[in-house]
Length: 359
Image (cartoon, rainbow, N blue to C red; front, side):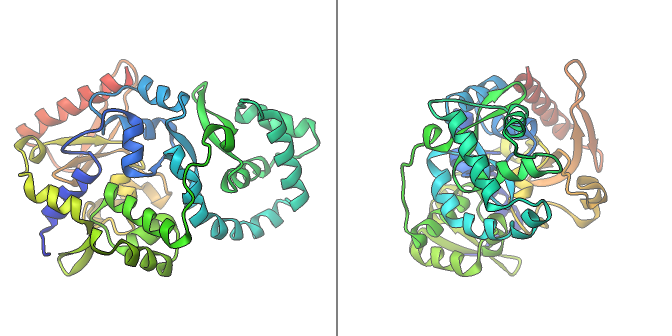
C-alpha cells in the first residue's frame, strides 16, 4: 500500500492510543504498547494516563501495587513499564546480548561473578516470602554484608539481577518503586521458542507503535536484524508493507483495516497533546524525522544530552515544548510558532486533562 505522511502519523496515533479509542486503565496501555520507556517515573506515569479515559496518577500507582504493571530493563539498558506476563519472554530475546555487553563495565567496577552470586543470594533471602525493598535499604543491606555499592556498583548489581530475571521493580514505595522477586511478583506464564519470541516481540511492537520500519524495531529492542527478519517471516500475512515517501514501513493488517474503516474525526484532526519527556511517540523509533524537524531537535534534546523534553504534538507533529508549572501553576507552554485559535482551545483541554491526572 502507499500512503501519505499524514496517514502514517494518524495510524501511529491510533496505535499508541494518543488519538482514537483510549484504554480503560494504565495497565491496558502498557499491554497495548508492550513497553513504555520509564526511566523518569513521573513522566512515564503521565504517558500512561494520557492514553486512558481519565485515569489519574493514583490509578497508575494502584496498577503497580496490584502487580498489573512492573518496571525493568527489558531492552536497550533503559527502564520500561512492561506487562508482568510478558517480561520473561522479552528477556529471553534480549538478555544474552545485554549481559555480554556488561563484561567491560563489570571489570572497571571490579564486580566479579562471586560478587554477583553473593548479592543475588542475599537479596533473594531478604525478599523470599513476599518481601519488598527500596533501593536505599538494599544498598545498606549489601554494605552490611560486605558487598561494596559505591561508584555505581550498587546500580550495576541491581541491573544484572533484573536483567537475568531475578528481580523487578514492583509496588510503589515513597515516590518510586520497591524491588520484588520476579518469581513471586510475575510467575512464569508463557515460554516461547526463539523464533516465536522474535515474532511476538515484533507483532506487539507494531501493534502499539506501527507503522514502523524494521530498523526502528531493531533499534527499539537493540536486537539483531536476523532475529527481526525471522520474526517477520513467522508473522506472515499478519503484517503488510506501507510505502510512504519512498520508505517501506511495516503495519499490522488489523491497524491498516481499522484506520481505513474509521474516518478521521475532527476532534482528532484538531487535537493538541501534551506528551511527557521520553514519550514512546517520539522515543519509540530510530528515525524521528516523520514527527520532528531537524531544526527543532535542539529544543527537544538540548545539547544532545539525552534528556528529552516534554513535547506539544499537533496533527502528529512536534510543534513545541512544555514544562510542568507546579501544583498551583499552569504548565509553561513553548510552541515553536503561534498556535491558531482552534489549537489554543485544544491545548487548553489537554492542560485540564493533565491537571486532572496530576491531581
